[in-house]
Structure formats: C-alpha cells, structure tokens
Length: 345
Picture 1 (cartoon, rainbow, N blue to C red):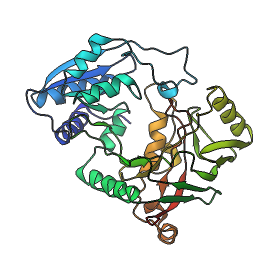
Picture 2 (picture 1 turned 60 degrees about the vertical axis):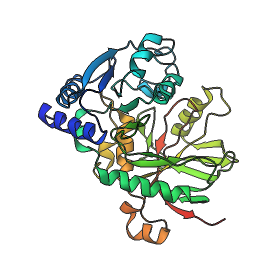
Picture 3 (picture 1 turned 90 degrees about the horizontal axis):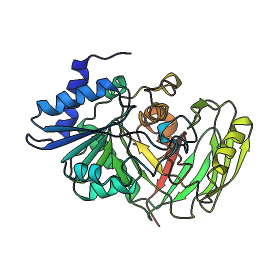
C-alpha cells in the first residue's frame, strides 16, 4: 500500500514535535543503501519545516560476510561507525539523529547517546510509519506498564500452546519505548509501544512453546509445527520439535556462544497496529519482517494482570514475548501469551 508524501511528511512532523525538536537545532539523518527514499525525503522536508539545520550522513554497508540471514539485524555489534571518528563526532554534535539505516547495539551508539544526542530509529516501510504515528497516550500506557513491571517480583507466562515459564524480576530495569525521543540522550524506535525488561540472571525456568503459525525470525517464516524450548536456570537447554526446531537449533549453535539465549520480556501498549498473520511477515527488500511481527504483537495491551480477565478479553490482556536468541543479535520470534504479575516477595 502506497502512501503520499503529504501523509508521510505530516507523520514526521508529528513525531518531531513530540520529540521536542526546536528551530535552530541540528538534525543529522543517518542513511545507507537500504534507506527508503520516500522516508528520507519526507524526513528531510519535515525537519526543515520545523526550522532545523539538516545534514545527511550516508554510510556504506558492512558485515555481509558475517550475516546469518538476509535480514539487516542478523548481525549486530560492528557497524559502519566502528572506528569512524569523523562520523561519530558529527552525530555527537547533533541535537537529534534520525537513524534510517539501523544502528543498533553498538558501543558507538551508546557513546553518542551519552553526549546528550537523541536518536530515533525509523526503518519501517512508509505505510507502517503512517499507520503507527505515536501519540502521548502511547507514552502513558507504556509508562504504566513499566511501573507494573518495576514493582513486580515475578512474572508467570502461559499460553494455550503449552508455554509455562516463570521469570523472577527486579535485577534489571524496565525500559520504555513509545516511538519518540522527548529527553536528551534518549533512544527510541518509531513505531514502538512497549516496555521491556529481562528475567533475573539465571532465574527463568519452565517451557516455551512456539506454536504453529507463530513467526520464526530471522528465517522470516511461519512455524509449521510446534517448537518446545526447555528453560533451566536462565538457559534454553533443549530445543525440540520438527524441522523448524532443527533449523532453530542449528542457527543457535552457529553462534558458538553459551550465552546465546538470554531474552527480554515485554508488554505492548500500541493499539494502531493491525492484528493478524497477514501483516506479520514479508520478504520485500525494503520491508521489515521483524517489525511486522512485532507490530502484530504490540497491538495488544497489558492492562489485565490476571488470567481471569485475559480469558475474557484476550486482545487486551496479551503479553508479547520477543526472544533475543543471541546476545548481540536482536532476532527471535513472537509468542502471544497471558501473564500474571506478583508484586509481593
């Protein structure tokens, strides 16, 4: 579905307003060969219309020989900024960086954020950006979910497919993403609308079932038959099932890293993403299967911390469970499950 430049410019203007962009501030647009041209042109026009000083920094692709799939997120850590002092200096001198190339999980990004520069990632197709323009209500929902997670001691996650996982909480903070950057040094991702944390180190125990029809990434495919992961002391110790389980097991072993199965747990708070598998996966060059999968998941709220209400209104009481299947590779699958939170000891 195509969107007009006017629609996308208007969307960018709303996001930049929420991000507190002021006239005279410097905006650097970070691009690569994979940057969507319409997103770039409309972002430039929107930033200029706000009175910003706009620069573009275009960087070459890297890591093709290290990628484990065609997805740009299949290898993270070393980026075009690695060792690129001039580019880093330009970004640190900016008030706002619009990341249209996917700069994630790198020391350089942390260095840039520590300087006070804000970074907003926006790499989804234009139609997704227009559909999911963040609003202040998203921030309120996400902050409420963050507060719930922050005061909880344990999360018990279940699903009809057979997932039964207990995650002790409290060792790690609850992180909020709501699609815009309204504070110095903040990173966010448009579109987003969720809060995340990690189970206590070595604490998660139970079973995760990736059911038929769930999305397995970075392979960009629907699961044909269930995959069962046994989690013991924070590690997935067994991956069982059919051919999909075998593919996932081989993928994990390719990292040759015993720490290759930590995962965040997160709750969605965006209600404008479409629900349904038809939105969840695509292999187009400029499409993001990972984000389409997440959009399917984050269209659910976490406003019902009890399974009783979850059974009555599953669409409004679903927890999303994206698993990071390698410490430096933000790839995984989405499971829609219900959850209970315990705030007591």
